[in-house]
Length: 253
Image 1 (cartoon, rainbow, N blue to C red):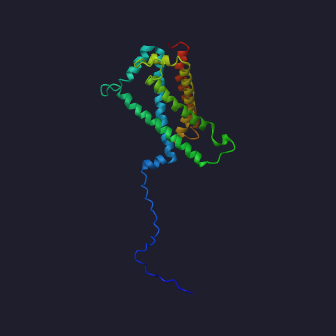
Image 2: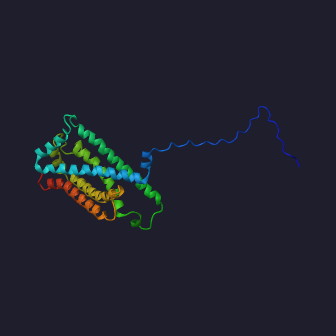
Image 3: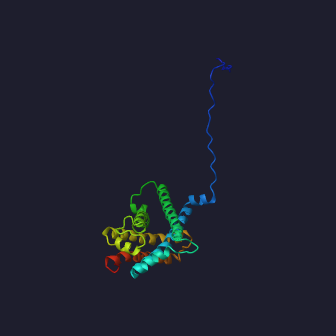
């Protein structure tokens, strides 16, 4: 039986190279903010906080909209006052341009956190349940579709009453007249009414969830937060809807 011997390599003969393995680069440790954002509780907290910021804006916006019932002078005067907040420390319209990016940040953070939480929830349960009701509750489906409707409405609302692009009148500096023109069309009323109903449902389910996420919920206070959510939803929905109803009935003209 022949024994294997190590023969010297012939000059010029290519030698096999040992297999090389790529060593993965070590990942940088995430910062505290990064760990917070990537956690489920962090995304829920961002979603709840941004939702409360937008809720505060909606309350102020609804109260301002009610100025339309006092006539064009009050409504247009209110719109002009918004552009002078902070003067003389701030220049004309600076307050609005400070608030707009903050609101946009709240909207984007809310939407991104909601979308990622939804994907995370679906990934955790890849197998479809036999019954749809067992998979997602009515509140969850309402929040998802309501969020989509409201996102589309924000774009329409800006084009309608901010830039005047799709408004039948669209004249800068005359918000009262622009409001009357917007709600004098069937499609303007339909879009606005559907969006406000979706907003009411969104607030009804979202406010109670935000209270629980931020640690304010408890078995004893649960009924109180649910009652507050219902009252907020009804008041805001009725307040916003009163404007197109006022135009349609001739109270605002």
